Length: 370
Image 1: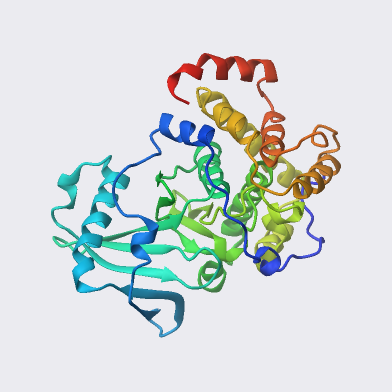
Image 2: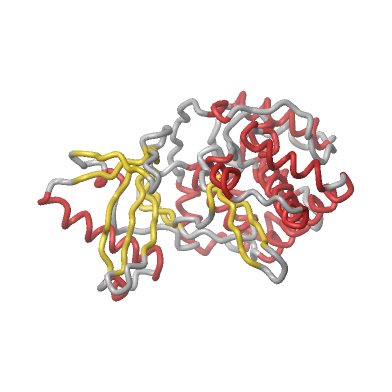
């Protein structure tokens, strides 16, 4: 297996920009989400926010167009929408404790007009100290839900989100957008570059194993944390639309994107091949451990996912052949669903459970509403 392809052809971010079909949630996935308290029955809905009557372009502090627009509602609807937005925020941040919203107000609602999914971003402000927070309102799509849940379970980060029918509510993921990071915060000293390169390799490893695609600089953030010596970095995806959908294996490799070339240049400059392979092994081991300590949750999700249709069959067959070639195995060619490819990818990690052990875990929890 090749550890990194620094000389491989670079992908343009628009390779997967074509509008992707929305896949609804099947009953098994709804059951899984209900079991792990990811379903909600109140609060705002995507179609509620779509009733705006006017929009105003939103510019940053330097006067540049952010590609977001603030929306305006009829006065008679604004109060109802604001109330539902605050209830939704309480469900997302405080398990439904409405006492937290007494000093909060909705500052604005923005819509992203760039891209296919047209998400809304809600800005909530605390009147006592002017502190603010954001969350997102999106249309529910099975690919995105699987991506959110896999990231929550298999990455070093946790994600708060829930689903209400055709609406998905997602927390704001803190960090510097990848493109902004490259323009304003890319380190120059070798010490920080080594730390950054290490984390990019780990990020690239997770994306390929989880089959999370389209991770160009506009779809992830870099979380920068001051540490004992200098800084620590973490790459976090913020867009999960291309979870297990595209046929091209390179789409699932952040290292392959033209926009990410500066990160790969840092890898090539400061990490020898032995270190790259070490960090990939470390991340695979960490992911395997997350599977083990999930108490059957990862297995339960993958059992649902491997039966779900979230991509065209020819996408599955093409990607399966590429995965077999990449890994030097033949475990993927017989898979009929994208979820089966993810299942095989995760189960091949060190310390994995056997198929028989996985099914025993699922059978043991079958009566718990999943």
